[in-house]
Length: 401
Image 1 (tube, one colour):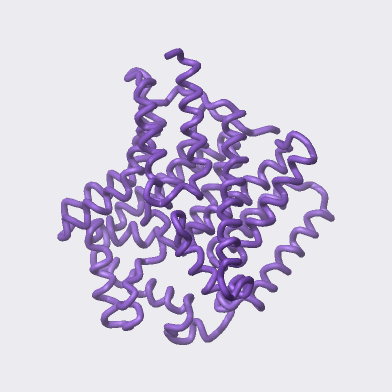
Image 2 (cartoon, rainbow, N blue to C red):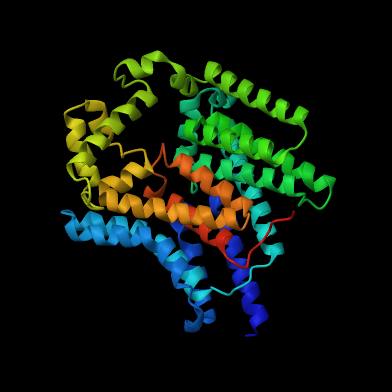
């Protein structure tokens, strides 16, 4: 097989990740396996990028070390299996493909396909709503629509992961629009319609963290990139108006500005529940400050705290709902510093290279990590580490100045 044919196959396998939102859940890990196997034909031990391999797999190494002092070995191994992509994806990009050059055409096609596949995901959920007896009433009931997303045949997702797909697609569109990467007006209009669809369904999902993170990213990106003062004022006004409107008319967003949320624990309010979770998280972190409890014992320790705080928390067995706290519970402050270092180094590299897509991706995830355990499920792990490695590849520069 000629090298050009191998390159075409690798580019094709990379594009499979662009339809990640609509890949059936049972085979979500298949693209990782296929890309890894195909990459074996490119392996050259002289070209291994040890630096970036270590940086981007450091989180997995910390989890692996924590297995040593975890009491529940079976659960520890299961958690490692879920997070195996944290190791496999960096190996693929920095051991097997350190010099592989992904064309700008492939990278642009990835972004466009991701926007399209996310729109298919949104429209699929809309079709399921139409099939319900209550029809469009589901759209105006946040809880009902979120249940639709969870129960979608084949591709059902927890609302936070669906929100990440939607937020990423919107970020990609904003980037393409600013960099003038559309071929013509018709293509721009087509992707504008798709993005509008994704934005509408993101608002219906009402994932507070994803919506606020997206607003913050687009707000500052536009402020920094747009030169005309009148346009900046318009963006500021639209940003403030949108947040106020969401806070008034959306129950989940309204919780953030309600005094009742913060006065005392209220099991009927999602934000109040989060505060109760965070209280327990900080409590148990203090007891095992430096090393944590191990990757297999984190939930058990949280449950012990929930038992003394609220039956609701114990019944639902909530995780820490904060990626930074989750890392600290499992691996202590040492692991948390490693995790923060991994993020900081990737940030520094993205800023140094003026890699705007990667900067926006990192900002989105770092903000979401404040309110969700994004890396606790395969859907979160695979997409995050693929995007980090894919856009951080030294031969990729889809930056049109």
